[in-house]
Length: 317
Ligand code: AMP
Ligand code: MG
Image 1: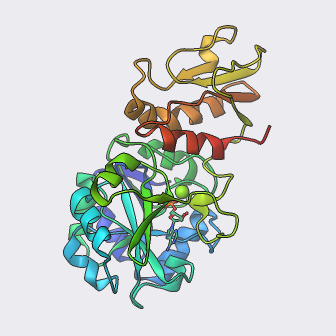
Image 2: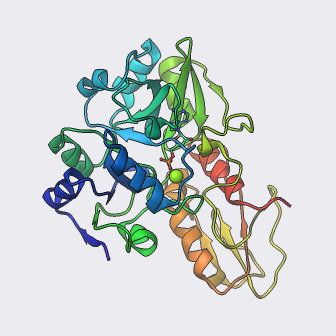
């Protein structure tokens, strides 16, 4: 069973020996291994049961280490990195050969991010390699936002989980790629679109694609609980029934047992809603109910990314 602790030296030793460990970030917890070691990367895929066509994000701690990993940094990418790193933003950049094929699923670009968590930044600074880290959950399931979530699902397969408390933002990073140096958003996430556009101007958003299986953050079913989740249309209420639960935005629904419901943010704060989203879905998944109804949130700020996750977690109706 994984040890849970705050010992950076222990985490470093496991990583240098080729093991994978759980790490905290401000988005969600990651399952990290040496990004330059194909065996460590293979272990990440095996532990997560992740298909090898789903590329990983590479984490580093400083812009000065970027030139070693990528061949070109488009001007808008540099501005985004300088403005928002460390932070919940991932950039797709042309990779150097040093990055194993397995990390990028054979793609010519590598996904890179500097995460904003003091423990993980200190760990990254202490290592002489970057960390490949997808979310630390079984493939397709709800992402973990606490060390305990990681332990619950992967604890018997990894030696150590670095405990950095509950994730500050609670949604995966926003992913931005570049074609002819023009930015395109491939996954909505913890960095709001408005903030990105304030730096680089209007961006196109291409988060749904059946023609691009190489980016499964884009898969239409993902981030899902085991129980069927039904996304409510705006203004719609769940049909009252005994074994039914709900994820509500500001207040519980009438007609359903209050203890079968979780509220994302009583004050309507979308940052708080994002932070609670995955933990609340996990709780709902563990209650004695058969169906989870979910209310959509307003689309502003992090709301667009929250609704995106709810759609991917839902079953078609
Ligand atoms: P996770 O770390 O579990 O949130 O997953 C990382 C996600 O990043 C993948 O599912 C892809 O959607 C995306 N990604 C990583 N590398 C690339 C890339 N080179 N091109 C496009 N998408 C990527
Ligand atoms: Mg993931």
